[in-house]
Length: 207
Length: 390
Image (cartoon, rainbow over all chains, first blue to last red; front, side, top):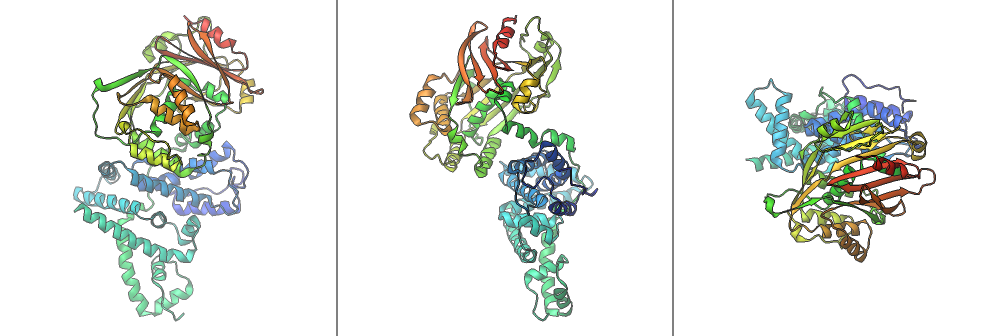
């Protein structure tokens, strides 16, 4: 991997830069040519994408320990998939998609909803200590409901929302989800409407 | 462009994702602009709710730390050779295998509280090698959905009640005894390369019969039925501190995976020809409700691995599951025999591989499980070590 990869991440570690790196790799494949990936190569890949994968999971599940576990699980899935022989394999998009799925599943599988709410509330508090308590409470409730709404939706729709609101362009989303770029607008609108319906239903349950 | 924009295109316009023709139309079409504002209101509502997904500057665990926990360790496990199996700290590992096997059969916690006087206690008093035909498991390899469900079931059904601290290195038997909390035996006149004390840990497993049954169905084994008496049972396991001593030149011990790392077996054999690993641990203690039938669980696990119902029943019947550390050994991977060791009967496992023969010697004495492993066809080195024990 390290042999051809000269693309570095930006300091902000934005999803865009991640996708940018992926695209570069498509033209200059990095350990993706179908041959066995050595441990050194895998380590290089791991180091390159670790922060990106972790961050999206951290935002999704909030709990840093859970996010770290899921990020490791994402790389494990990649490792189990190797060697990859598809010529058009989009490494970064694949990692993002798997990470998103794992994060959403984690939200779904929280054993007790109360536990999730407490966890989410605690980390929200840590993340925004300067926010006033009433605002924080409202934000916490919204954030918990939004995550639960995402977890209730179909995999494809929630992936779409997570990727878009994480800052990916339509072209990048299309690449990650193997869709046509022109289909992203309509699919996004549909997903947002579905999200709103789920959110409202959950909010009503809460009342 | 005369045709009005679709809703999807109007949504895309809010993200600046229109092509030039579409953009020109939008700029000149009041009707599309009105519809765009309506869609924008929907979009803004979603955007507010999903703002938590926006890229931020969350602190990220260092790559180095993450890498130490990364899949390359799992890789080692996936490619575990007989050598590595033998060199892994087997008591902990065998215990973990048993626990994982149980965990496959047990799930979510219930509110059922179990008084201690209703519990059976399981302590290891002997070791038994169980040759297993893994054909049933092989057919499940690559079944990712099933793997995910199993992982989920296991993580949801297991609660760690005592997390182990980092292992500590000591220099002699008395330090090891003090750190581990039991009388550690080390051979006289042999210089240890490393003495590593691993901390104790404890966890509980809960059984949800319905979920286990669903998992068996998913695995294509609807014929295996778990008894209703197990539903809701809570099983706890205490794993005492253990001591792992190496002699000669050995591969590095990975505390996280409880394994010795290294390259392929043949290379390791040559490089670590004089290595001996000596492990000892007081018996793990398992507490389970009196109505949990371990024999039935064992039979079910054996059938799951590919054994016929009759064969599994016969085999399950030969083992006292309440006092035996069962070491599953894939058929054809190695041979085993009962041997006299340290005044008791133990088991000697030997791999027949021509290029990388290995051996492992296991026995239980006075409530402590012992294990010695090494490379090469000559297992007499293990017996020499035993004979030098106080």
